[in-house]
Image (cartoon, rainbow, N blue to C red; front, side, top):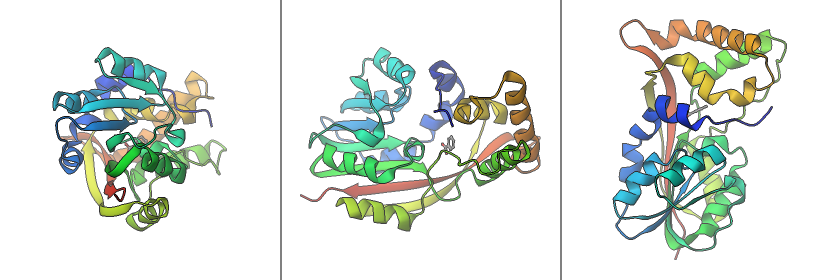
Length: 249
Ligand code: BEZ
């Protein structure tokens, strides 16, 4: 697989729902003015900006240079950095992350870096795809790949359940305050094809235009009976894992 390629303008236009649906994880973060907070996988910086406007001293990191450019344009200190190899040392009151950790397939490396980044007593508040996330979409993608001769293709996402992720957190030294799987069916205003364009570029990178369009057509055709409604349009079968854990004093 080639790595996911992000089109930051398209993401801002067609994936605004990602930030808009972060109300509950922001409530769980309960940000206080003056706190120094790392936004891990800050994307286009929309939520980072919101937290900055609440008076937080924000720092954003993302693996995509395009996304970091967008975040920088919003006046937020930030850097391109792989979440698997964070370089911070006891400097944040909180590490926040929305809809990013499922892109990082070595969770122990990520959680180790988060733990090191936090001050003693600091908290990690994150939400990302959990077990069963986008199961219908993943099944349609796997079936389509198998039909085109790639039956054993490993999809590049990590969707753990509460027990598995609790183990990862506790092994790193965290105390888990809250961890829950939340079903969150999500309307896709820009449709399923646009979702596939935005989020499966790593899978289709080696396809020519014709093969890519055929892949998207086939996935949409498989999903239409389950995830399309004439009145509501397309939706995605999102399941979120919402987590709060603290580094002991
Ligand atoms: C998600 O946000 O759940 C997601 C996004 C892209 C691919 C897979 C899952």
